Image 1: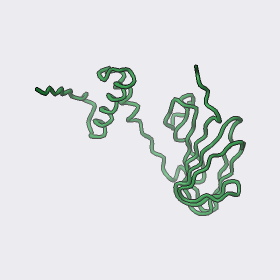
Image 2: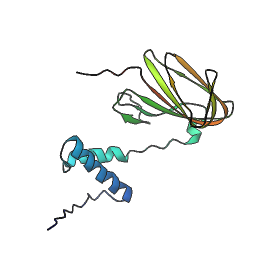
Image 3: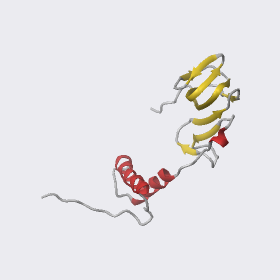
Image 4: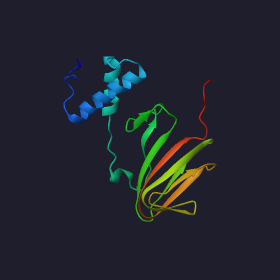
Length: 161
């Protein structure tokens, strides 16, 4: 005989998206704390999953907008992760140029979502990616209207043993 357990989600689950986030939160709880019914952990995870930010093209025109930042950053306009990494988006107009400074012992990954840029005299086209190391300053110039993602992270991650 098959037994099916049915549990109703809390009353604040009002949409299909909320229900998906709730079920995913229970899966995360099962993996992280080995208890899918740990209401506090599940609810905390659910609330974090519901956090969504919208970054319009107008906000990103010819500037790097931080969208995901290290949990140590006090920027309330970004999503936070528990890693030493920052993600930026930009929408460059034709001829638009932006700069980004990399601190010592940092590297970057650049992704051209759509368009064409010059990065230190190297042409990058739609779907191109580059790993940038041993540079202190990046200058990115759009040859035509372009969407990019830039990830800034440490050259080396420390490993605790």
